Image (tube, rainbow, N blue to C red; front, side, top):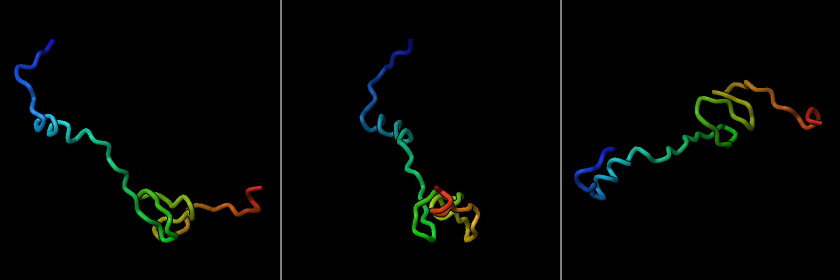
Length: 63
């Protein structure tokens, strides 16, 4: 089993762990104002790059 020879300082430990953080998700805002992930259709209005790509159900169709 490996045993360390010298104690890692707080600074070196922090430098080693600098890439272990959780990445914050990228958020872009649609023309309707809803937050969405980039390169995906808007979940609220169904548009992508200014075009309607997903059919949205009306209140009558949902029942």
